[in-house]
Image (cartoon, rainbow, N blue to C red):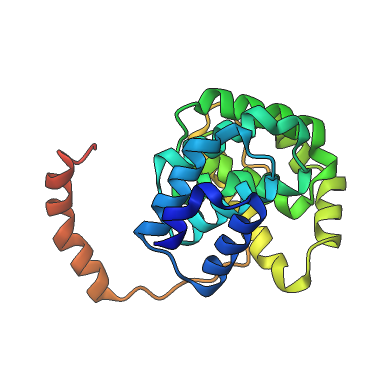
Length: 230
């Protein structure tokens, strides 16, 4: 309640510290959300601190706050201030939108700016972050074809492997596989799949009870969807 009442008197550094504390404590509520909304509406693109916007987006992602005023305001900040953006922050700016499946009102301008920024700063961004950014493109049904050759490039893949912690490699490979498969299935202009097929998969036991249940509920699901083709 205090934050919501005094949001106009809080400095950017103070607000960032408060939000980081709430996020780390695993706490959020309607008053905090309203406070952030009021702040973004009042300050918007005039915010100076990039890390404050990152903290706001991180809070939204952590607590699944699909607040259009906050998320649209942050996208406007990105468009207005992208030239001064630290490349290390790009993942933190984009991934909450992919995680929340939220398309900003200014989607076209947002992604045009993102494409341009990524093209200019590709080599300055950690390859692990690049993979997560590509994955978020696909989550938002945007297909980053201009970057495909840079991703499936032996040099990039070698750097990715060298700069990824061993315990994270399987996760990164899975994201790459999903990225490749998603583009293959959803984007007609994609010349994929580009990754070799995994032949190590083993046969999986299928529980007959589950199969019977699926067959039982499919007609009901089709009816709810408006027909088998929907």
